[in-house]
Image (cartoon, rainbow, N blue to C red; front, top):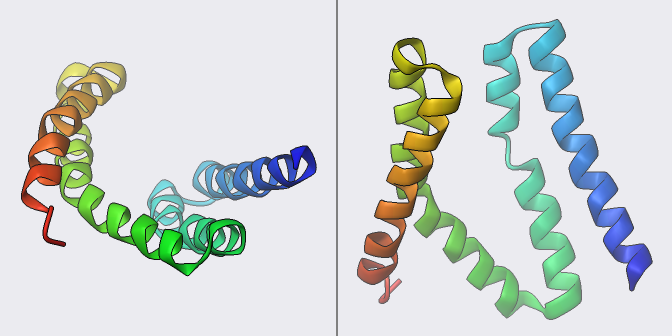
Length: 112
């Protein structure tokens, strides 16, 4: 069981490290585009389905879809505010926006 967690950790770390490497040495925008490729989602869904079945994978995918709307609020605040207030503050504001939008999104997504 611990070996599986180690493998999951290493896969996730490799995806993140690779994306940051591309952003740092080639082009930050390209790194962002590559980060949006659902590689982590694919790996997560495959591992979850193997561990807990397809129903769990479907629930996970629904959670991803629901979480997308608050995520847009978060990422647009980072894009719009970083040049004005700095990255750390814009991340904090973006996360606060995400925290405010997530319960509303969950409430209105109950039929999904």
